[in-house]
Length: 282
Image (cartoon, rainbow, N blue to C red; front, side):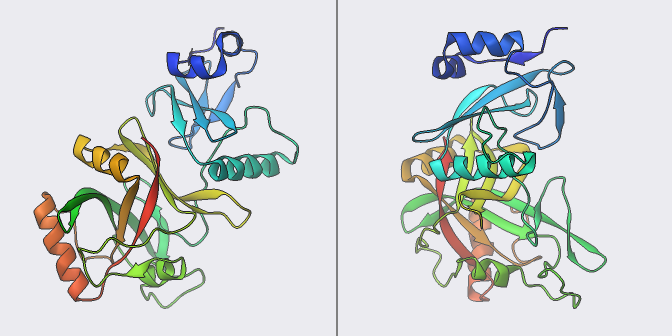
């Protein structure tokens, strides 16, 4: 039975015709895989599958994804992100020397909230916090910055916390995010963190891994579409501003002016932390 595998012209030009033909022939393609976008199982014999090539400065990693999640494409990422992915996969396979076409996955870190729209993670005993993300342009002075506003639906506590106290902002400040006092000021970049965008869609927010490289802090179950204006601003500056607020602070605002007003109120109340995260992808 032939594999239902798609190798785009972009990927083919990177890996070469011979390797692309071997993939299509099944020589180097897996029977089953974990989708690099939604992280659920896939089967190259049963469903259309995309080849996704993550390219760093010196290394390229070939991954596989459901075609419904992401088309076959080349995604530029940092060398550190690729190194972290290769290490985590090799350790999971029990082979520290494994390096042939590893599947880069972005696991959810312990103690971190898990994203909207579909996944849940305990934020307090008996509760499940869903992390909502709103994309929009936020003016810093006269310049529009591609921004993400992250807001859980309920309290998020530290691992082992049984009080139900919301420690969401404290957790992020421990990671290096800074309290916002002026919405017009661009926050400093946070080393090791980044935002992964591919084909005009938001895929993940990455954080530094204790083992080196990067791991996933937030992973979209289905890639989130962003506007052309948001993508242009992110590409122009090479970064995205991430704001985080406690549950019930900003809400889902239908317009960017209303989003800014809600953020301004939250800043006055001392309930916003932020950082500038480098853009990975396009």
